[in-house]
Image (tube, rainbow, N blue to C red; front, side, top):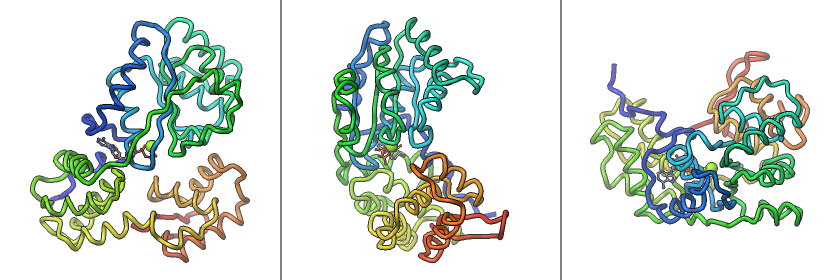
Length: 329
Ligand SMILES: Nc1ncnc2c1ncn2[C@@H]1O[C@H](COP(=O)(O)OP(=O)(O)OP(=O)(O)O)[C@@H](O)[C@H]1O
Ligand SMILES: [Mg+2]
């Protein structure tokens, strides 16, 4: 069997928390400074992290919680957990408080209040604009939780009522896009960790970094895709050809025309599939229903998926209940 070029594909996954984060000393310093009183059970201020996609908001927040505030913090992605009940459950579970899953929202809030009375905690709500109900923010802040809220949209919280806004007293921390050199360093660090040594020439890595236009996720995705392609083609190293193809694919989400023509439901379906890569039709529809504002009925869903397939964005296999969808990459 051909030797694998990618030694650790998980290092490119969304859930991977890099042990080393680069070029974000200022933001890391700010977060540590603001939240360190929690370690002595003192009150902390709340923070709002904004910046465009792939600027390291999630990575830095998770890195800090994991390394500096483990045991007294919780990370929740509100794209996955949108209701107050789900978010409270996630927070309690992160704090190792058993939840049976049958408690009412009120009961969960009481449980959490009891925890917070004993010790200060830090809660990170990523993609916070996806929350169903912003009153949750008030509930957490009122009880003295330190909050890290994250969104790509700096106006994400503009619809907050003055009451919640003043209670939160958020300080905004901006994540600027990376420059080419910074992206190169970030990608290089991951490559050293995850790829077989010597299979990606430095000048190719520089091209990958440059093509990503400030977005670290795109830079890493280019490298991963190029590695995969070289593996499939049974090469011993990544050449400019794999890199070129990988760049085209990894940047298509930003530039591809068909995506601009999709409606919000189709975009959401595409995004869910992009995260999971391949899913059965049933599972995809289930996940879509939990995250969509006003999910469409099953028949419209199938029409939308047909359109994504027709546009060449998604592949399909099987029929009826065995039907599955896969992102084209
Ligand atoms: N400074 C950094 N050092 C190391 N890796 C980084 C850094 N910034 C980003 N990354 C990596 O780049 C990828 C994208 O970063 P991240 O998920 O944090 O972006 P984001 O700002 O949360 O984007 P989005 O708004 O789309 O969620 C992740 O794999 C992350 O580990
Ligand atoms: Mg993120």
